Length: 84
Image (tube, rainbow, N blue to C red; front, side, top):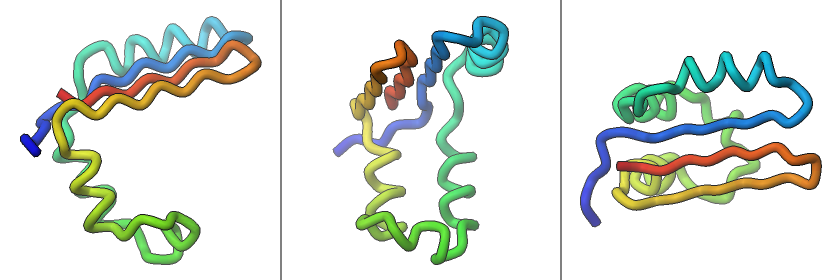
């Protein structure tokens, strides 16, 4: 798979318009994946203890191009990630 260099993040919280506005401004531009790779590398093993994916595979998955994660809750909240 091709490598992605940026992640596009959109978070909408239904009951909190002020927080939603802050998050939209914070993630206005695509976020470089180099920061996420470093954060995953620095995480201790006990943090990812309950995640069934090893660190190496998680880093590879997050840096693959074309990955889309769209989470919608019953409360109307929405989280959207896309690697580009």
